[in-house]
Length: 531
Image (cartoon, rainbow, N blue to C red; front, side, top):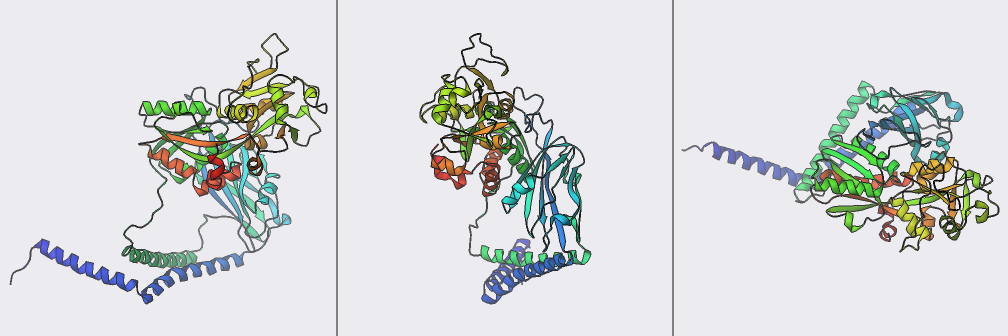
């Protein structure tokens, strides 16, 4: 009797194993097998839910915090040239900016009332200085405004107001710092709750609880894996979500009107994709597109995404792909001294705005007798997507642009031209600079993206045009001053840039953009196609 060689023996073993796995797969797909596997997934989940309810019942009040991100943003390199740096709401430069994201949740079955705080909740950073704090992703939404009104900043710390939180209510804090941005562990949260505690979501639980969770999760994972394996026997092309992460270095440039949103998305992406380095260098739409084209021509290893306010001209988009990201609403802003009695808004018609910018009305008293007798001072943008939108959709008819006028001041403080009959007009290079200058200059008028104008601490009046403002409802009803933000990137060989664009337009980021004031195109496709 002859014996087979090693290859014959291996083939025999492979055949036996193949038969075993085939039989196992078929048995898994019987009703009894499927029932067992489903129970193996469901029962551990139910057990963990019951265990969690038992844990929550032991402690009546628990304010849970979760530090989701504490990362440098990579903004403002020293050799970036004439780029616009990230400023705070008072137009002060943020040096070495970093972003922290902290979620706060009432994780108990009991409400936490205002009298239940024995000491204020304090979020403190090991290094860095807090510059701005935004409340986002609040549930319910009205909670965000309530929390925002009471937040205090104490150098390297954020102090939360003692507000009533119902069971399950939560919100996120987006904290911009100067310096800092090291590790999540460098953020500490402290406070005192009557009948409870302020608890870190990452704090390890008791040993018995950990063992129970490990065991139940293992059973559920094995059962789920078996279900997936059984399904693979019949589905040769399983669906899989496309990956969003790639290695490399990415620079996000372009629109300064979208700078705040770009910084938030870049920080989130960097924490999600740890092998990618993302920097934000905003200037204007044209500058970002020019840098993208230069990088493509030089075959630069550093990949780029250029954010553009509106569709760019074909002459600057060769070899690029683009994605429509979000609606960008703009507002005209006026210095508060023009109408001190106004409650934050000023109603003008489009015709009045056009007469101001074409020089026919040089005093605010000429525009409306109720307004202050101050000379009109125009603070406009240089070449930018914001300026293009203003000249096309406010001064123009939507198809053709009308010029905002010639510059008569180079320093935005004094008029250069000896002919004082000409209207004062200066140009700033960024949205934040326009907002700050209009707030400082008596009689000034300018324009900026609506979210940044609304969040600004400058002394401004937000202008409604023909009774409409920059809300998505008014835009749909005919408010003209808005555009669509587009992301441009190299069409071939730029996996990181393409994946970043996918992430930027994903449903999760759509919710973040909406909360930041930029309605995502994924929810307003027809509106985005119209521009």
